[in-house]
Structures are given as structure tokens and as C-alpha cells.
Image (cartoon, rainbow, N blue to C red; front, side, top):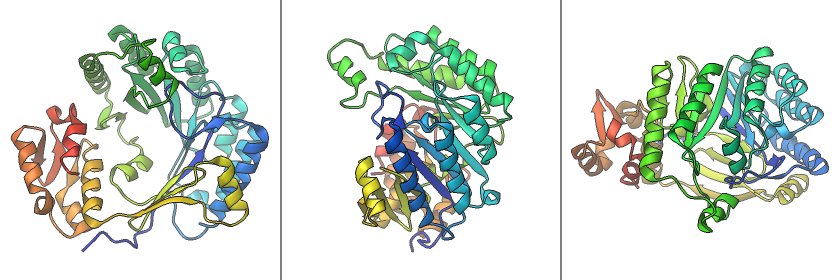
Length: 380
């Protein structure tokens, strides 16, 4: 038995691969925005979206990038009006758009409200101007606070703030200040990510050339522990390795990824996972646009996951959630208990105090949480 491959995905991701400027640490597929290309891209997006009309009951939409808020008001309206043309607004339960504090305006926020967006992910990263400059961000700490206030003023009651820790030269005091400012703003959701040095990014090159220096691993770990302690004291549920939410505000869209369930991705470089098959669109923006216009295949990658890999990935992703994975749910999806195929790994991890069963639920211990990457490789 394998998971029901006919189950319909309810999550839609839309990729906007344009930025005002590429950040120093970013290796996501994006390019500096240019009006003519953006307009052609939006037309292609709508055509790709049209092909899915009526096939799926979409409950969550996530528009990410890149920087979706780099679109001007008319471009943003073209994008969002095209979406509701093919997906009934009444069906959408969670509708997230990523926003950069340096590109958000009152008019853009009004367009978002008009077209039923009900959740904002604000890419703050830091409230410290020195850190923002090092990361290559285009906004200041004050811009971030003003953007948050503007969103509140226009009625957004589900806002996530992204923060990054472990930056070069960042001190514990810097990180505590960022957390304190975030708590003063009182968002419904907060994501705290350790900085990663992706190959060939400007920041990685600076590290290689010793222009910047990576914080020591134990310092990064202590910053992570500080975030957990600080945020849980302020009544945020630590529900996923990097994510914290007030009651009722966990990100429904991202849970689809963490539970390794089906989703649709449209746009250049977007991934989909349908009926056990993972695909990716052409990354090159112009090639993507041309493929859509000419009705040619825009897929650059496809993979049908073998059952054993599908099951292993499901455990790995689900262990990111603090609640872990319920054995009964796993059995319903794959037709066997977790221990039937992964008993040796689980016994070894239990022996070292890294995973535990609470009831019928396999989850990371607190010790396992701090070495999660090592734990998860055991299932590959």
C-alpha cells in the first residue's frame, strides 16, 4: 500500500522572481526587476494558472519570491485579480504574500486587502541597521517598524516577521534587541532562521576571502536557544524548528510541506508535488515565459518518488514539527508502521536520547532538536 496518489492538493505556491536588489546571502532564483519583463511574466503566470482552473480545491495560497512587493500597484493588481479569476476567494482559507519593508506602500497594501490576502510575511531579518547593511537589505530597522504599523493600520491581523540570527559580528545583545523589538510589535507569527552561507553568494565569497567571519557554532546554538526561551515566555508556541506562533496562527500552507503532502507551484523555478511525482518549472525567466507563450513543456525536472524514499522524506519533514508524526497517520498513508521499516534507526536515536515516543507520536526530544539535521540523516 502507498499513500493515496489521487488525493487532491489544496496548496498553491506562486513564485515572483524579481527583487529591487539581490541580497548578499540569497541564492533563490530571482533577478533585479524590470517593468517589461515583469509584465510579460505576469501574463505567463496567469496562463499557467488558467490551466489548473477547476482541477483542485485550493485552500491556501502563498506568493513568495524574490520580492512580490517589488511589483507596482497595477502589476500587483493584475497578479491578484488573475488569481481570483480562477480560484474562488470563498475557498481560500489562508492567503499569504511576502513583503519587503523597503518596497511596501499604502497603495500596495490596499490592493492586497482588496483581493482577499489575509496573511503577510514581512521580511525584516533584523532591526539593526548595521546587520541589514551587511546582509544587503534595502530597508532600515525603522522602515521595518513603519511597514508593520502600516499593515496593522490597514487591518492585517495575521502577520509573520522573519528574523535571522548568527550573522557576522552579531552579538547576543544584538539578537536580544531584535527579539525585543519584534515582541513590542506583537506579530501573530515569527520565523527565526540561522544564517546560511550559500555557495557563490556575495556573503559566502566574503567569508571565503575573510572579509567577514562566521560566528562560532556554539554561539549560533545559544542564539537559537535564546529565541526559543524568549518567544515561549511571550506565549508563542514553538511548533516547528524555526517557527513560532500564537494560538491559532500556525502557517497552514507551510504545514503542507512539513507533512510532505501535495502542492502546486507555478512560475519560474516553482516546484510541484502531485500524486507522488515531484516536478520543477524552468528556472530561466525568459525561457519560462517563452515556453508558456508557445505552449511547450516548461518542466525542467520530474521525479516519481519510490515508496521507501517517500516514506523516509515524510518522517524527516514531519520531525521538523515539534508535535512530530503520529504513527497511525503514517500507517494510513503508507500501509505500515514507522518501526516496520525504520525500527533500527529509531532504536539507535532513542538510545542517544534524540527522539521519543509520546503516546503513538514520534518526535524530537529537546536534545534532538539542537542536532536535528544529524537526526534526520538517519532516515535517508
